[in-house]
Image (tube, rainbow, N blue to C red; front, top):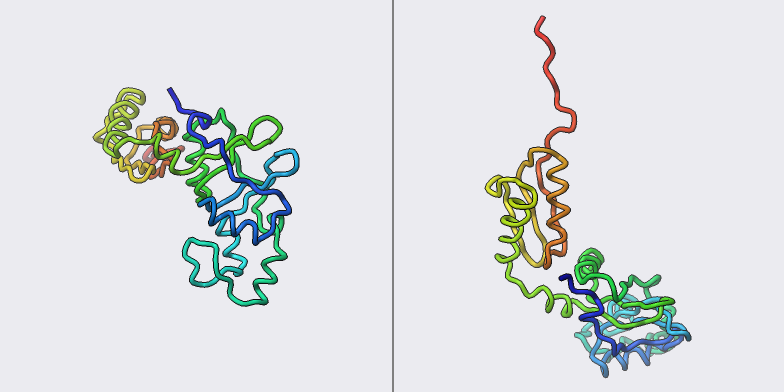
Length: 222
């Protein structure tokens, strides 16, 4: 049975309002040991996300910042930082998932967007929780070899009816690379689609050599 986001998400979320100051957010990053905040409006609706990276890219933290939110470059920049709010710094619209989404959906979004966590929204777009890479990895507690074997034995052989020896399957850090030549393009696409739905697979690199859609047919010899 597929694991849903609601099964692993954290419901006690550190969030900030649109008008939260830079100083307030910097303090909460340190105190709550988080690296990003969902930004919510007065109704609890998620409207954006502020990450530590968003704050760093504004060049208001010290150059030797190493995971804590202390130390500003100069007094003038400190005054500038105090004027910034969550609304100034946030990334919006927020990329979110719902409690009913599968963990694989959340994992693929994190992989594609290179983010460490995603807000989870319920009815009306209100904040319901947050899911992190750590939450996802806890679900995907399977060895690379176990996943690779499921792909070759279950997907390629039993589901697609193809000879696994004709394909090279590598798996690392949630990413599958498929190589080989399927008999038809339809078979290749079906194989990639099925592999994407194997638990523990975050992304598929399709390196298959597809047959020509319109093979050249030799004409009669004159």
